[in-house]
Length: 266
Image (cartoon, rainbow, N blue to C red):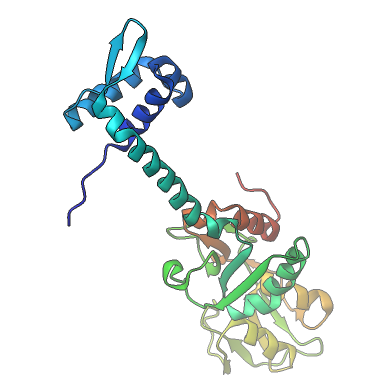
């Protein structure tokens, strides 16, 4: 069954004018001019094919046709408000579903989520492993971390400047080159692993040297688990926090983004 396209703006103006029985007071409520209210009412009358108001010496009066529909209209607006509240329940919840590559989750994200979670004991996290840019709708995600040259079609914040560093075990580097699918090394490798985290672990265990994102390796370098055997080099790709605009605008997502990125959002 085809639904009728409702003139919602006109109906909203009519509701305000009917409550106040004044175009001027309705205009004040709606933050428009009285002339704009009058135009909306005339347009609504044209659509409906009925007269809604009559002017009398005492002021505006509702016609019988307007009175017949007013109660149902106001009930309908209450239903709209209830529908909006129902759709906003997810925004008011304190559950966050995050997609991220396994390596950045283990090396960087997990301790920061723990710190963020201590600010509110009611916060709950669900982490989804995702080595490729995720489908937000299918996975019901709030936010994701990707290793990319930009946020793509989504809103996004870069977590740090894109930098790569070559690391090895504290004692000896060895000649073995460890690479992973996203590495920018063009040499022939002696060892291939699934991701940068495994490359970092392999280097720490003495398998050889691995070129990995600096953000991923920073904690292990600082703790002495691995050592940097060259200076970090700029890289077009970096770790990004991304989300579609509706998720990005949610208060809980913005709070997490600001905590993880260390800077306030505009």
